[in-house]
Amino acid sequence: MTETPLIQIRNLSKSYGQKQVLKNLSLDIYPGQVIGYIGPNGAGKSTTVKILTGLIPDFEGEVLVEGISMAKDPLAIKKLFGYVPENAEIYDVLTPMEYLDFIGKLYGMEENALQERARKLLAAFGLGVNADDRMDTFSKGMKQKVLLIAGIIHNPRIIILDEPLSGLDANAVIMIKELITRLSKEGKTIFYCSHMMDVVEKVSDRILLINKGEIIADGTFESLKQNHSDTLERIFSKLTGREDTSSETDAIINAFD
Ligand SMILES: Nc1ncnc2c1ncn2[C@@H]1O[C@H](COP(=O)(O)OP(=O)(O)OP(=O)(O)O)[C@@H](O)[C@H]1O
Image (cartoon, rainbow, N blue to C red; front, top):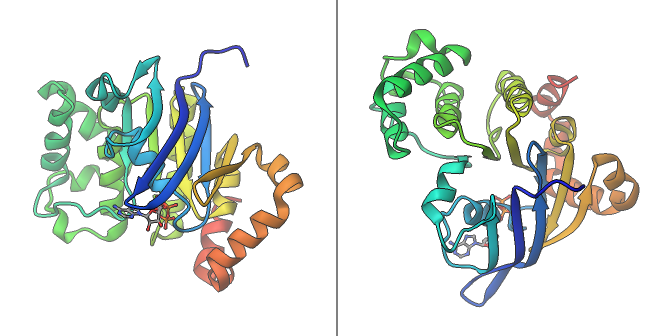
């Protein structure tokens, strides 16, 4: 590929105390890629994305986004990212509009544009009629949708979804798949962390497999299956155990077919 990488990660390492959780990661990520970032619990996925989004400022190595070093201008880089964290709590005494207004202003959005985009996205996610209702009356799936919208309210170039499906039902899975497809068509770069191999397979055009803080495979899902089937099987059967055969998981996986 001759294109300039959008994100360049060079020799990235991170330790918590004595424990090294990322070991010398080097990666180039290109504009428009949909990357599935997979690996077992504790492999280092969330730590990687928290470094990319500026939430963990102390690390070794270098991260460049659009050629700008994270160390030099973290605020400029933060605005390029939209981040939907795993298991986030929402401040649910607010309405979606109040919450999105708060988040949008953190990104410096102008009031009218912010209101317009918030209502448009809420309607697109089927929450138009709930835009001004307090979220403490919402289901988990409805709150997750608001968190997703909050992650993309400022129209970021790069979107990071960290396990956006945990605990959600099959409808939410369909919604995520549609969202990823739509955002990818708009040219967004997407970094999608998940334990659900089958789901990642269907939405990603590049898979990164991380284990114990090291990227052990990088390629298409097909190439991964050919060259790392043992690792994939070991990791995911250990990881998901019986869950993969539960009817709920089956329903989620089937939602993609
Ligand atoms: N703030 C922290 N302090 C100390 N150790 C941490 C901290 N955050 C993460 N860790 C440890 O770092 C390792 C990597 O964690 P991380 O959350 O990045 O993994 P992950 O791949 O996202 O896992 P999961 O799939 O379970 O979310 C784990 O062993 C975790 O216990």
